Image (cartoon, rainbow, N blue to C red; front, side, top):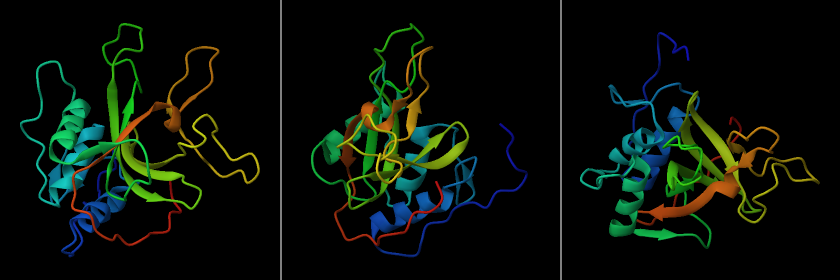
Length: 202
């Protein structure tokens, strides 16, 4: 991956709403190949995006990693202990989104890795499609996820994206989509009204 010589670092928006600060920082990072906020460059993984954005709301995830954990599992444990983890209902922008088995983390050729990826909710469309901001190999991007139709990549009538590919397929197998790999949402930020934002770039 080639990183441009110059990148505009994200800065938190001047607002007293913690969710708005998290969302403003995440949205400013979309399209960037690395996660850099307020002059600090974060590691190249999905949990670093969460650490960087949530730091703008004063949330520190330290002390949640246990032996055998990966970073995503540690974030899940933090959400369960300090907020709530849920699978039903409409998610709130700024909440965490956990995914399972997005890659073979322990490299044993089996789907036994548990939680392996995390992003945050950017918004929810009228049809329930969730826009997720997360970090993948090429940088910070937006993906779509529709839990009512997890096996469909696109709406057959409108052609709109419902679920993006999140795991590369095995030979001869179809792509595995965001809705199929969804595990749970996590809420650790204070509840509050967030401003809707039109999503164009993905």
